[in-house]
Each structure stands twice: as C-alpha cells, then as structure tokens.
Amino acid sequence: MDQLTVTVQIPVYNADEAALRACLRSVLDQSRSVDRIRVVDDGSMDPATGRGQTYRRVRRSFLAEAAARGVEASWDRTENRGKRWAQMHVLAHDDADIFVTLDSDSVLDAHAVREGLKPFADPGVKSVAGLVAVLNTRANVLTRMICLLYLPFTRGLRSAQSVLRRVTINSGTLAFYRADVIRRHAGVYENETFRGRPMQMNDDSMLTMYALLEGDTVHQPSAIVFTLAPERLRHYIRQQMRWMRGTTVRHFWWLRYMPVTGVVFVTTVAEYLHIALSVLIPVALVVGAAREDRLGEVLLITLVIALVMHYLMALRLFTLRRSDDTWRFTVGLFVLSPLVAVWRVVVLRPMYLYALATCWRISSWGTRGSVEVRASGG
Image (cartoon, rainbow, N blue to C red; front, side):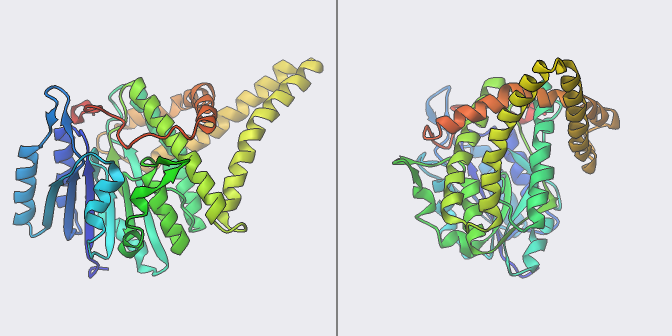
C-alpha cells in the first residue's frame, strides 16, 4: 500500500479563503503523505468587484509549503465550466494509482488518507467512500439539524451497502478511486447530459457508478472528513433540491445499466416502492382507524414507534467522538433527534416528490454566486 501513488484533486469555486487554507493544510498534514495535490480554480469571481478571485496569498503559501515537504503540487485557474471539468482538467492525464476527490470547504482528519487506502489492499475494490461529518455543527439550529440528517446516510446506509460491496454514492466531499477507472471515462464524464441538457450536478454518483460497473465499492468509516454545512435556509434548500434532482437522474442510469438481478437495481426499485408505500399506508391507517373510531390509538402507537426508530438511528452520534464537542452537546443532539423526523416529513419529503417531478431542471455545478459558508462560522 505504501507504493501506491496518490493524487488529491481539489476543485475550487468561490470558496472561503480561511476554509480553503484549512483544507489544504489538512492534506499536507496527513499521517500518510500524498504524492500530488492538484488544485483547480474553476473561474472563481469576486462578487464585490466582478473580477477574478485569485486566492493569491493562499496559493503562494500552499505551493511553498508543499515544496518544502516534497509534495508535488499544482494550482491552475480555468474558465468556469463546472466541477467535472475542473476535476478532469488534471486527472485525465495524471498517472497516479489512486485519485482522491476532496471539496475545498472540507478538512481531513489527520489519518483520513491512510484509512481510506486500506480497502484497496483488495484488488477488486474500485472506490472507497469516506465518512462525512459536519464541521460547523455549533453554528446555529440548522447546522445542528443537518448533523442529525446526515446520520442515516453517512453512518447508516453507506455502511449497510458496504457489507454488500455496493455503495452507490461516494460523497464528493471525500472519496477514493482506482485512477484507471476515472481516466477511462475522461471526456465522457464531463459531457454527461440528461434530456439534452448538460449534467454537472451529482458528479460523485457518476464516478461511483463507473466504479460499480468495474468492481466493488465500499465505505471506510475511519476515513473522516469534516465539511462546512449550509448555515442559511435558502442555501440549504438549493443544495437539497440540486442533490435530489441529481439523484433522481442517477436512478434512471442505475435502472438502465445495472444488472437486473443485482443489488443496485433491486434497491433502486425498492426505494420507489418505499416512497409509494410511505404515502399509501399512512392514508390507509388513518382512514381505517377513523372508521373504527380508533384514530387516537393508532396515532399514539405510530408516535411511539417513530420515536423508538429515530432514537435508535441517532445512537450513531456516539460512534464519533469529537474534541470540539462536549458530552453534554452530543447528548442534547440525541435527545432532540425526533424533531428532525418532523422536518423530513414536513419539508424534505414534499421537496423530494417535487424534485422527482422536475428532475430535468438540472443546473450547473455552483450553488453559490459568492461565499456561502465561512470557516469562522464553525
């Protein structure tokens, strides 16, 4: 494993300078050094002046520090074409063994790279998903809620899929890939379209799909990355709608290209069955209970079951001990976790149904015309 050449690619677009500096520092401070760091600025703009954002000071200090540590580093600026183009600007011709994708507003745990490489000891593994945690948990109520909303996916679903070696979406925040898998799809990956429109969102699920078609995809929960979550509701809603529409498009691809008897195809069908039943069963229960004058009893039983299930899921809060979170803070999040269930039902579920119905309204990569979240917020 020590012989593997590792390239970390970081696309940058209107990033907070402090967050970007912390991101780059965390890559240089890895217990298992990386061989190359490729930063690509996808045409960032300063909204105050309308001119290009150069990150001159961050760039200068990063390149100097990388050279001092013997790490090959580059920093390119390109016209704004989207995250995929920023990635393949350097990865299409990089001869590394492993590519690591990392978002510019995220900070790696000191052992993230070392841990993320471990599954590649198995030649059949083509990609590895890291574990994503919220960096700015304490910023406000929204970021606390997002921390809880992440749990079923980052510490639940991916772990379950990993048992079957069929993780369907590696978060672009931190993911590892066999480099040859990515290089083989250069030129195709950047030009994906849906209903004639360029598809720049859900880049991470597309890369994972390439890996799924060639081998196994797993989750490594000890490869941890901390990312800045949206601190404003408007930013959060835009992000969620983009993710939901992109995932819907990816569902079409899984149903088209994955084996009919395979795990990915079957679970995709099961997900849509679950959506239908989650609407039909509550309606049937309420109507039936009302007819028999047992509505209060049914609602009470439903509430108890929902509380138990959400507290069981929230137990995963305690699987990651953080130096910046007190025991009291974590317990407080756990106690309030059922409130997140209400948010899922009242806000996220209607949003998802709307995203399903409007999935062709895909947009470009960027969700921000300016810096959305600053490192000082965490």
